[in-house]
Length: 260
Image (cartoon, rainbow, N blue to C red; front, side):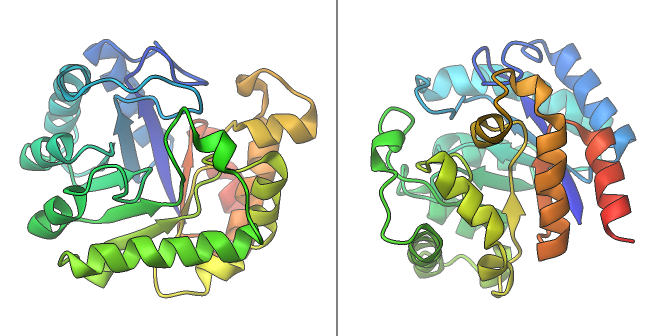
């Protein structure tokens, strides 16, 4: 299993907003992630938590590019994923050294995203979500969340394939926390094999999320470490390929022990 370390260059992300806005702080975070065992860095400059305000392309790039450039120069061999749903941002960052695009909308929000991914032939994380940050909670209504998420991922995947994206570029993410109730998230975690049994590698991002706080009755995201560890252990059991987490040291230990 690979570990994707989170670097949010935002003032308002739910757990670490404001910590890495300065490129030097983002560099230090990247260095820590790599030394702790991260195989991939996921850098984002647009908060996508429920209720957040999206920023325009110029602001996203102004936040993102200085940190991306210093991290790419300092760590030429690490895989860098950029967390964006904007095709202009994706095209820019892929042109200066990013390796992957991690789109929480799976190409829904920006219809040009699939074409950019096709042109660059890069890995593409297709995440299941509905609506946007303002509307997603109202759209968490499913006949069967596992089946519905699976079917909607298939539709997003077909859209990408139709635009010329190669199947080998695609990674699936069921989208914990995006247009899902707490119970929906728990059901997805219990049924991860529905996704890992398919052709595409699977990424899961459970780290510190609200549904863990719901189960543990813990309001502080930074105190959801053990709950996150339990979900990561479940990911190992279900043969998830990548986990996207904040706490690299601890989750590395969880993965190592769970693999015994």
